[in-house]
Length: 240
Picture 1: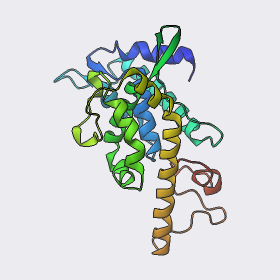
Picture 2: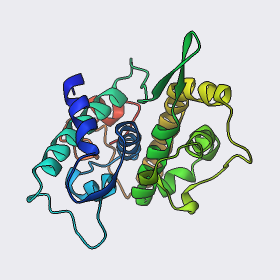
Picture 3: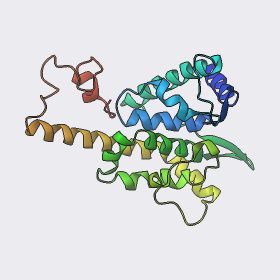
């Protein structure tokens, strides 16, 4: 996804006809990251109502709103880019965070990205629910919850059952920046735990005779990508 396309998407998200609120572009990046990390191959059309909230009583007709169709195209490109970056074992995934001028330096703030990430978890709870029961996942998600609680975006409201470890007092700018700067390492650790959980689940299923080993010669990866296991899920941090 090019910078020009990113700027176009940012402008479109706030101008689509018939929409009462839309995810800001950094919140959208967090939302899509949670969907990709949870596995599966999410399609763009079903998630657009989560990205573009229609006016009450006015369902979003993608065919009738050219802007919405273009948003869908750009969202698909962003999701593909996130998938590629998460799958690169040599790349430390970087969330899209806001940067503000502060005296003679800049200060980073990932609260909106984290709020979008939690919204993605809520949307894909059928897959994230079991993952959140894996060891250490809730502990690793703690800074995400802390930062998300500081976000002030109406389109990023998340059901309270998906919010945990909310701070008793607002984060200071220094605390917010520290947690934001550590987000790449936090996400790396979460991705590793997800992979470990999926591998353990697959091994247990094979031990029960419910699955065939995916690494058998020429066997396709069970994620459905059509590629061999060793070059797909078997060779990356994130299972599809």
